[in-house]
Length: 163
Image (cartoon, rainbow, N blue to C red):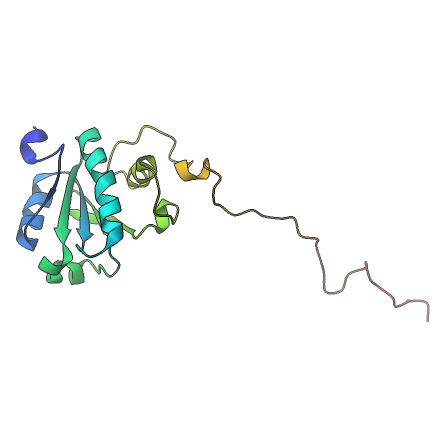
C-alpha cells in the first residue's frame, strides 16, 4: 500500500499543488525544501535517499523553493535546506539547516534518522534520549568546574567584627 503511494523512494515534486496532494495521501511526510545552488542540499539529498529506502512508513519528497514561493512563505521557510516534517496533513516540525544534526557538514545518516525519530515522523529503533553525534565526542560542550564565588563571602574577609 505504501509503495503504491510513492513511499520507499526519494523523489522531486514539480509544484506546490503536488505538495498538498502528496501530504493528503500519506500519514507521514518529510519534504526537503532545496535550491540547486546550495551545496548543503546535496549533502541532505544523499542521506534522504538512504532513509527513504529504509523507512517505508514515511514518504520522502523534495521541492525546489524557486517553484514554491507561496508555500515557503506560508510555512515560513527562510533557511535552505529545511526539512518540513508533516504528520496527518499538518506541519509538525522543521529541521532547519544542520543545527540539529551536530552543526557539521559530515553528519551521519543515523544522526538525521535520530532527529526525524524525535519528531515521530519515522520509526526510530535507537534511543531517542541519546543523539548519535554525542558518542562521536568530536564536538560537544566540556564543562569545567568553576570555583564558587560569593559577593560577601567569608573566604577573603579582611574586616574584623571586634573593632
